[in-house]
Image 1 (tube, rainbow, N blue to C red):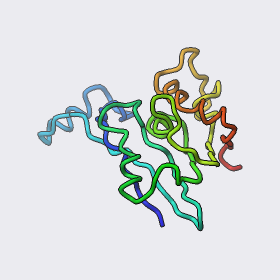
Image 2: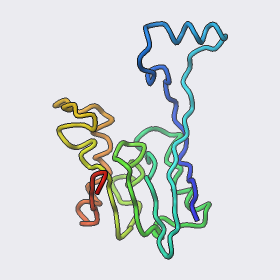
Image 3: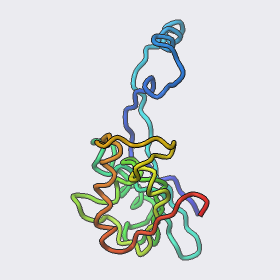
Image 4: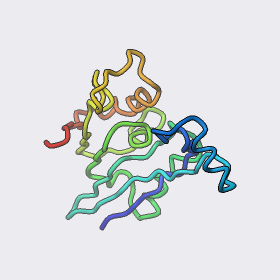
Length: 166
């Protein structure tokens, strides 16, 4: 069994995500089609996989880190008949807030899972990001927010990390 579990939505300024465009180019193309550039509501999701007697949660949503339209993952789990304490394994693809924020609420662990795996720990915490560029000495909020939910799990000794190709 595998399930997509909604965590909610967040407004995203899609123009800021476009690269290799000239100033005003996208706006001009949109205006030609009578479309006004506005934020788009993007879905944030986690995934649940049942494998034999394991319930593996891939990512944990944003939790309380990114606004009131999110933090719906616990309700999505319950709607699927799963309690957070039944999750046996958590796999985080990386630790940006939209993937790891749901690990804690009010600084307390949401999941008591015995196994916790984090892919690419250095993607956000190392001095060099995944594109080989040195990170600024003052990390952007998207790099510092995700660290917040991790300490309770790290202190428990449950976190195992590995890099791609391992």
